[in-house]
Image (cartoon, rainbow, N blue to C red; front, side):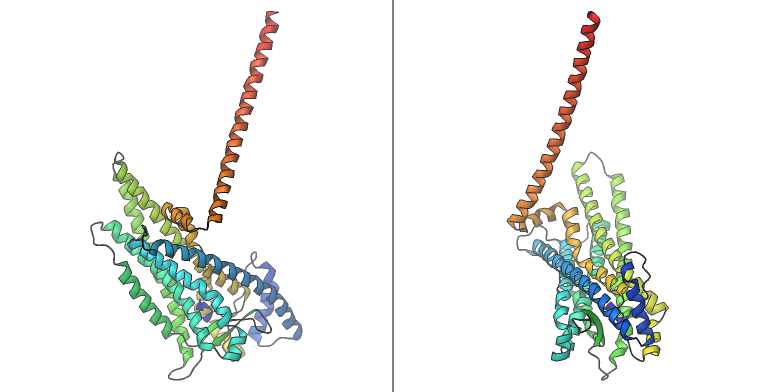
Length: 406
């Protein structure tokens, strides 16, 4: 996502997760802020960056593969012709999976369009900027669709007799408006540049222009748009709606007649659905919170962009270890939802199993049988021990009885 628009040479304050990169971080920051470095510093940076960047490439690869497979399954389960899961809520869930799928696809796409070779030899700055902006679009849509899901659930719970929520129309309008907004701020895109002669991952600014306006002025729009439109406002509204939903649903539980098993099962299923959807929001919030906190601290409070401009006389981009890992943690949100659906929803779990290849199903069934057998063996061993213990006690009593008789 284009959040690297706004981060500039951030100090790595972590004491645990990134402790191995502290030396790199300090050297990198000194170089960026002073605009100078010696050969020894450059050599140290290149060596340490290579190990870090290869590890990041592995993380991005695993994230992309898991997200593509998992979200494809979710879309196929809901949108297939004879799907029993196609309803107003799940139409939005499918669009959420689609946005995550797009975000996952842009990860390897950037390795091609934003690679050093393509940018330098083919001058493919526009495709690179479009790929990066598409990733921005995907995570905009993820947060906005979660807000729409919360709105749909609130209307369904608070106004049960209201007409069905027009999910398809509303989500289509959301896709259109968000795409137009992201496209309008595509200029001067700060991107990750891959496979340069010095490093595996670097950063640069692409698609700059001066006419009909200065593309650099789009940065401020993009910064506040991402921070407010992709995170703060949608998640605030979503949390508020779910708070009202939880209050309503759990209040119904108190006044529901416990003898009405049908109503009780319906309420229980509704509560489980709400918990699942809340968990999706919580995971998204946790993944993106560190990066947005870094954004707000360094761009809004410290104004590091101005400091960098004064020091280096040019716009720099953040290549700190902290930023790279927090950025990966943010975009990794695209791969967790299918696991949540599998865990929390029986219908999704059954549908997932039907789509899994036969050998995967056999593996799962084999592991399950092994687990059952282990439980049976443990139970039998426990019974044998109890039987032996009782036999020993009986024998002991018999011997004592015979001894006393004699």
